[in-house]
Image (cartoon, rainbow, N blue to C red):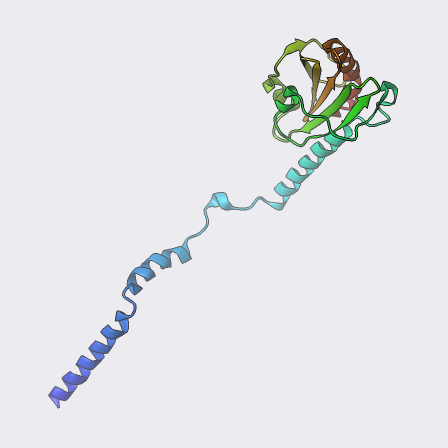
Length: 205
């Protein structure tokens, strides 16, 4: 009887060992996976509150509205002798130097063959004057009087293309004219600066 009990106990022990033999990493797997199921997300991963999301969305909406309102229309340019271009004019070096944001704009042609392009960009995290202070365009600086409605203005001419950048609030409005001579381009872009400045956010409020 004693020998029979030992045989049964040995069978139980062997059965237990055999059952683990098919899963040699059970203990390792258990200790590796168990902490993962109990880890709590870090506080920084918390989602913004609904109020914070609504405020951010509202701020973006205001900037977008200001950008759209600053784009010159056909009515605005009725006295300039231009018509809408069928293809968008290429960005000059100065427009290419403007930091990316939320650009809008349009391209126009003069009867003389000169081209006008406007690029209006909105910035949520920076003021337009701060952005304009970072812009460095190639070519010669163009002196442009500060028009009403703008907080800052800068201009450059490179070849026969002249560009004026006007800043106000969170909106940067750029005018680019390419003409047969740099003098014509400069005269045209400077004459348009007050018109563009009048559509900037501060001028509309």
